[in-house]
Picture 1 (cartoon, rainbow, N blue to C red):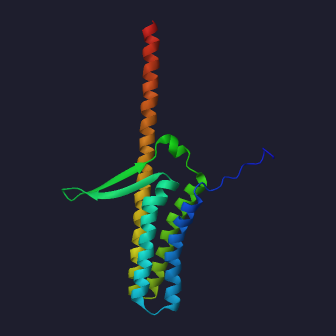
Picture 2 (cartoon, one colour):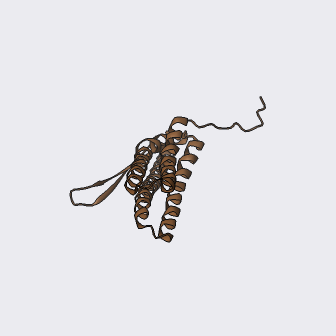
Length: 183
């Protein structure tokens, strides 16, 4: 084995990656194929939205946690205010996240929204308000996941930076304390 060649990293969670892509692809494929071959708008709407909702749930609750170590949700408190909640793995576990898994997660998350956005533009240009409704729901679900995971990633970075700052400050403080206690 030639050690000078870089080792190709495989997907650490191929089943999760598969289902992460499958639900996105199935909603998009059904929408594309059904608009070409089906006449019933109700069936197109219901099946496409159900597939997009399944994708939303899988990404938010399963693949986000497994592939990038992040999870988010939104709550409404007693005063009616929206409160975002974030979960992330600890720093050591986040460092072990597979880069291919992470790359696949983020690219498909953004690409999915872009494709639904393009479909929305086509629906507007063709003046198909009913199909714009389907696309709008699917686009909204995709954007909600993007916003949630982006906020969660920023929150995780802030927590890691705060932990690093506390650790460095504590280490520096104990070093100074021990240096002056010797004098």
